[in-house]
Length: 290
Image (cartoon, rainbow, N blue to C red; front, side, top):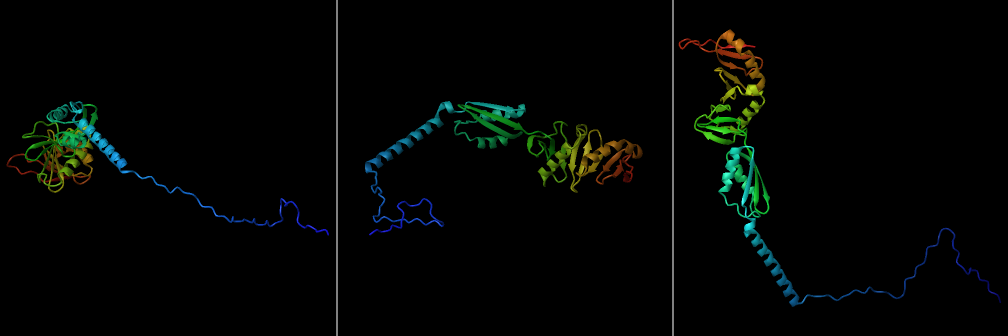
């Protein structure tokens, strides 16, 4: 009897949509990953050898460091100082020549820079090590701006730092700063403010100023070279007011004679007080001009 086979011998390449999901069969036998369970451990003799190697290494490192800091070839033997001011350069050279700078490797440049910066006339210092035994020093001097009178005369820079001191006024190369309160308050602020005002002037006008007095009322009193007139003004429009005085001084003198002081605190106006003509003659009243 013949049997009809309804299933094809070969599986078709393309099945009808939707595709049949594939069938997976889990194997009956399970597999396990094999890992190496053995561990290598250091024996006592290995630890002892490793410990001895570390001791030898650090001992050699310490000996090398000790040799480096005590080696005579690395001792600072030469110091080169550079500065635009010969006096400051000589001062720094003399100071360093009297010091034992020691080994160049352990020389603390930051500490040395702080010490040198406190020398009179020194504003800042740059230091550089040049192996094996040279130290280069570049010194930036303080620029003198004025004399400050506080019992003695002190030559100062624009920050009020003292460069030199004198018992009497040595010359008239710089203007003199005085204070009616003796600079007990806001010393640096007053010096910086006065130097800033001087820098705002033309060189020929700045050269005329011989004395600036800080008054207790917050104003300033100026004295010019070969001019006995007291000029009272404040920081507001300082240069313009001073130029206004210089432009009108001759005409005011022709109108009122010799002047005792000129008050320029009010913009666009000048209060003038003529000087007394004789010892027993009172001075004329205050005049206002604009």
